[in-house]
Length: 315
Ligand SMILES: [Fe+2]
Image (cartoon, rainbow, N blue to C red; front, top):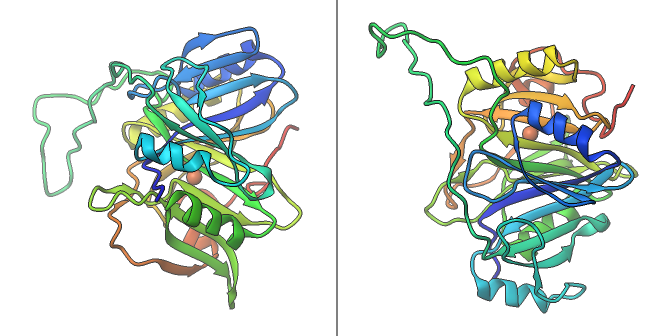
């Protein structure tokens, strides 16, 4: 059985690679390769790339997820509608099988990419808590810089049928429902399912895919990238504000997943999130079920931005 182990990359289409490279650099990624119609960006972690920009009309192009083994790639290639095993054309090489999730989302199952050395990253800031001091004769002086993305953490997709979308990730990629969100006052109506990778006893992020139920509104909602710590989220916020980008919601702390979050719009209106300090769970954790109230979206932070659930906001 296929059990994806991680999310590796996300791909958007944009008409101007230079402009997207500038945004992604200010967001905290590092350009690693470019062709006439592809831009590859990496994080400070070990994947050779975590974001691909495909030159074209603005849009969402898909995600890449890590197969548990080469045998799983083989198994995936025999699924209905799957591609053959193909070479990945980006840096790091490796192989992929291209799958199609409900509503036409492209999901690449990948294996065998050559990992890269991590980039230098400032150490986590040691915090002096009220009753627990750990920093004596040393100072908090983090650099003023972009939020130095380490890795892609999750991607949120909108489906005509949110349960069908979640089921596909469970049945095809072996993912587990961590928490379900339902319509407040109507527990039978799903609003979304947070899905994590089944890594057995190895902890996995609270969610790697979030499948939203939004009939008639099919698009990515956002892609989310992990940074070192909450200070990096805040420093990154200041950097993007100074550069004139458009904030979408944040800084706050989510309830489900517990991440300190900050959402921004790309030059073409797509949402990118920075996060730090998210929850990790092993496979034995039973699923939760929560009403989709504002209190269950964030435990603190600004009032929910009115256009937060729109996939693309350009004005
Ligand atoms: Fe998120």
